[in-house]
Image (cartoon, rainbow, N blue to C red; front, side, top):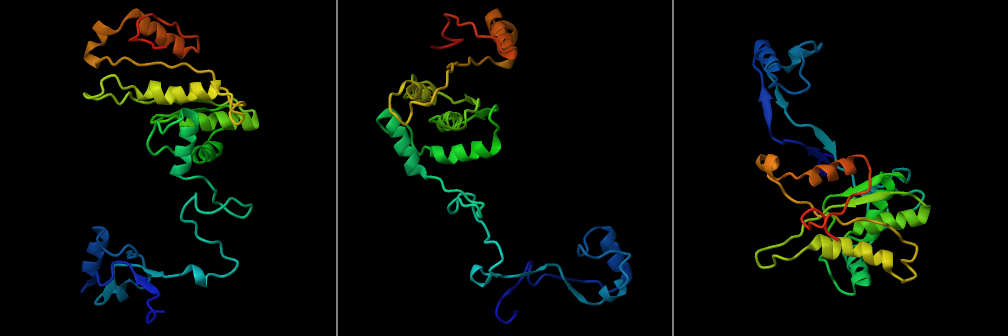
Length: 249
């Protein structure tokens, strides 16, 4: 195996040598000795005066040489097709996500969207039928659609919270990705008369937060802000104020 290059030496060529037992014990106490060296080893004297390799040995194995009863190594959860004997799943790629966004918006409203099939599979594996799914980088709201599809499929009662920034810039100060893409996707799915979406439903509220610097809380926090926090904390319907800085339609 050595001649065929099937043995892999980690830290190849790195050795250490102890010329006395005291030197070896000092290295053990300082935790600089080889990880397998211990004072209570029955043959500890054999370590003195010899070159000791610091690395470990691994056997290089190839997939073509595996035994029939060995399980194929899995490089990715998304590698392959879902079967009873496989741990992998078959999901779409970014091109599928782009087609799905076009189907909802009629155009490519978001770059590099994830496919619904991928997020649906991850939510299915990680969340129960009554859980809340939080996506703090919601983007085009693929996660929202995935939750809606799962609820329609198994009659679950999952809820979702989608969070996104406006992505406004100096050149586009009025840009609001969260309102115009993230929330809009949910609105369109709810209102769609397309047969493939008619079973999807998710009543939701679009809320826009107002940033208050910590040092300004005593001056800028209004009673309605505190009231909205209490309503949220206790699961009460939110009061909609006319002030657009608090909530937006």
